[in-house]
Length: 119
Image (cartoon, rainbow, N blue to C red; front, side, top):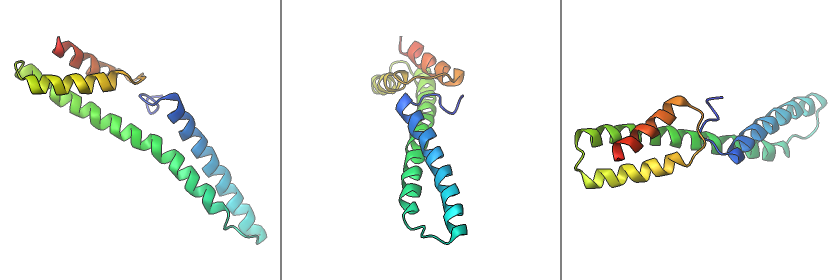
C-alpha cells in the first residue's frame, strides 16, 4: 500500500497494532458502558493507541515534507549546478531519504532525480 511506503517495519507494526488496540478499546467501552461498569482504566489504552497511531503518521508527514523539499532543491540545483551549499544540502537530503524502504514510484523517482542531479 502507498500509505506504508517509506515507513520502516516497526512503524507499520505500531500503526496496525495501535488501530487494533483502539478498536478493541472502543468495543470494550461500549460493553462496559452498557453494563454500567467503570470505564476509567480504558483511557490509558485510548492514549496508548493514539500515540501508536500518531508516531507513524507523523513520520509519514515528515517523509512527504522531506520529499517536497528534495524536489525543490533538485530543481534549484539543475538551474544552478555550481552552488556548493545547495549541492551539499541536496546530498544530505537524498542520502537521508534513500535509506528508507519505498514502494511509491513517485518518491523513488524523486530520489533518483536528486541522485542524478548530484552526478
